[in-house]
Image 1 (cartoon, rainbow, N blue to C red):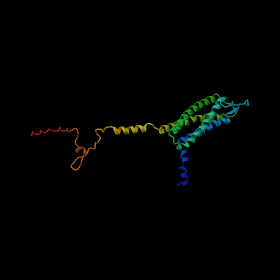
Image 2: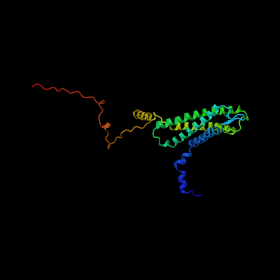
Image 3: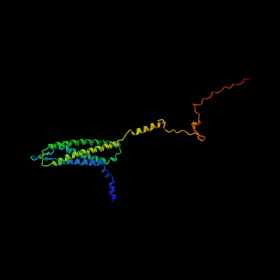
Image 4: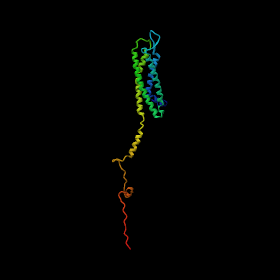
Amino acid sequence: MHIPESLQDLADSEAVQFLKRPKTITRIFAGVFSLIVFSSLLTDGYQNKTESSKLHCVLNGNKVACSFTVGAGLLAFFSCLTFLALDAHESRIGSTRFKTAFQLLDFILAVLWIGIWFVGFCFLANQWQHSPPKGFLLGSSSAKAAITFAFFSIFTWIFQAYLALQDLRNDTPVPYKRSLDEGGVVLTTLSPPSATSPVNTPTTGPNNLSYAGSAPSPYLTTPKAPRLAMMPDN
């Protein structure tokens, strides 16, 4: 099957390659899950009971549960959008320190969101368990959707933290590596030759002149004292 050149260029473009990255896919999933969590409770999370027209949270009538879920989902959604935008411009970051700080912040926030969604899931499940079965006319499906995708968000952020940790391990510079290498070169240069290393000795022969062989050593010869000559008397 022949693929048109235009589609092949599109598949090899930077945008498509960026969307195929595991980190990008994980952020998209985390953002979609957060969107479902806060939007489901924001739209149908507040309902009136059968005997009253006042709006209450469908999670056991606890306003804190609905407010916490909506706020956490909204913040997580904007966090995913922000880091997606930063990931798109990551290749243009020239400063190594800024890139390392960005990756460290990504890892810290991922671990923080793991804890938030774990606590949120346990809290929402507990409130839904204590909710009356027929206390509200509507809103049960929205509450179940929020609890389900809060649970899924835990694993997406765990994988996100793993990817951030891998980036830190791969891209963290070693500040003393060059100094140690240079020191090794200096030590290698100044160190005496070993017994096994070959020593280049000058070759001597009738046609080869060597300074070491022709020049007398000052330590092997001693200067002779001048002799006194006796003059005859006239």
